[in-house]
Amino acid sequence: MRVKILRQQTPVSEPYWEIFSYDGPKDNTVAGLLDYLNYNDDITDINGNKTTRIGWECSCLQGMCGGCAMVINEIPSLACETFLKDMKGDELTIRPLIKFPVIHDLVVDRSVIYENLMKTDIFIGEYQPSGAKDKEHQYSAAKCLKCGLCLEVCPNYIDGKSFFGALFANDCYLVAARNSAKRKDIKKSYNEHFGSVCSKSLSCMDICPMKIQTIASMARLNR
Ligand code: SF4
Ligand code: FES
Image (cartoon, rainbow, N blue to C red; front, side):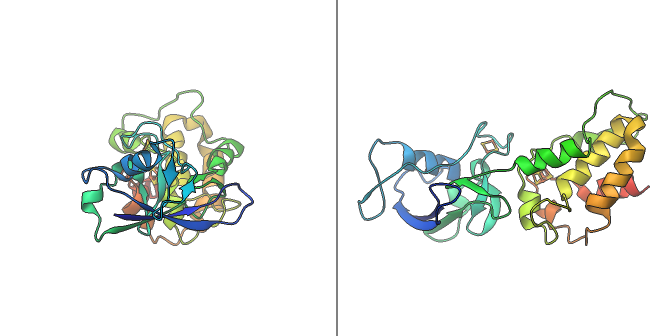
C-alpha cells in the first residue's frame, strides 16, 4: 500500500508530501500503520531514501483520548479507530487537521480548545445538579474527547477566536446541567460564542467519534 503523508518539520517550515510503502498487516488501523512505518531505526521513503520518523500523537489507542485525530483520505478521523480493511483502493493519504497550527507532521496544537473553555469559565466547579432529568444526555455529552474533529468539519469554525464550535456547546450544556449557579453566565457565553453564529449544518454530529448529539445540547440550552 502506498501511504502519502503531509509532513512539516517545525511550526514555521514548509509542508511537503512524502510517500511510504506499507507492507504490514492488512487488519491494522492507521495508528498501527504509523507505528509500523516508524518501527525501525532506518526509516525510508518509498524510493529507499532515508528519512525521519513520522510525528503523530496518541495515548489510548482505543478511541478514548482524541490524540490521534487527523485527516485520512480526506475524512477527519481518529487514526486508532480507522481500519485499513475499510479503506478503498491501495493508496492512503494522511494529513494533519487544518483548523489548528501544526507543531510537527501530524501533531497539531489544540490548546485553543482549553483556552476558550477557561476564559468563559466552562468547567463544572461546585456540583449543583438541577435534578434527575437528562442524565442520559449528560452522560453522552461528558464523553467529549476534545479531539477537535467537530471543529475541522464545521463551516463556521475558523480559528476559535470568536466562534468556539460544537464541543463548546456540549460543554456549556453539561456545566449548566451540573452547576445551576453558573447558568446565567453560561447562557451569555453560549449565545456569544456559539448560538448566534451556528448555521446548523450539523456536520459536527456526523463526524463525532462519540456520537454526541450536539443538537440535543442546543435544544436543552435554548429551553
Ligand atoms: S464533540 Fe465529538 S468531535 Fe467534537 S471534540 Fe468532542 S468528541 Fe470530538
Ligand atoms: S490514540 Fe486515543 S483516540 Fe486514538
